[in-house]
Image 1 (tube, helix red, strand yellow):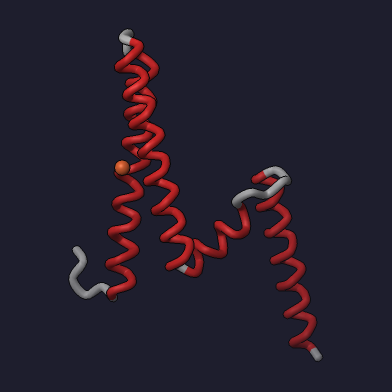
Image 2 (tube, rainbow, N blue to C red):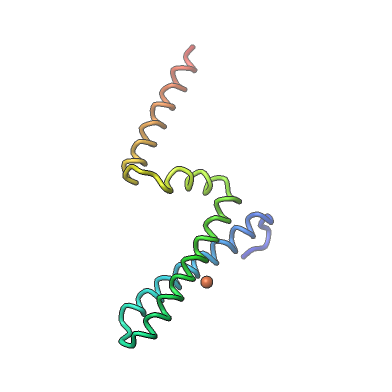
Length: 108
Ligand SMILES: [Fe+2]
């Protein structure tokens, strides 16, 4: 599956595969912690869930630093004050205006 891929594509693949595993682990631990009856086991599972969240965040940061498009999108959407969907609509609107400007520019 990885044959023929560039080093950066291979690294990104492993980061994404690891991210998938970490986020699934977060979900699994979270669900288990919700339904177990023993309070100490619940506490352990919640601790594990939180550790997996840390691992998830570390991988997201690596991906942000090492993939330009992910980096751009993360820069665009993380920690924004406005609504997420309205931010995307704003971006689409800006892209249309930019596209119209480019078309007008080409007529000159
Ligand atoms: Fe982990």
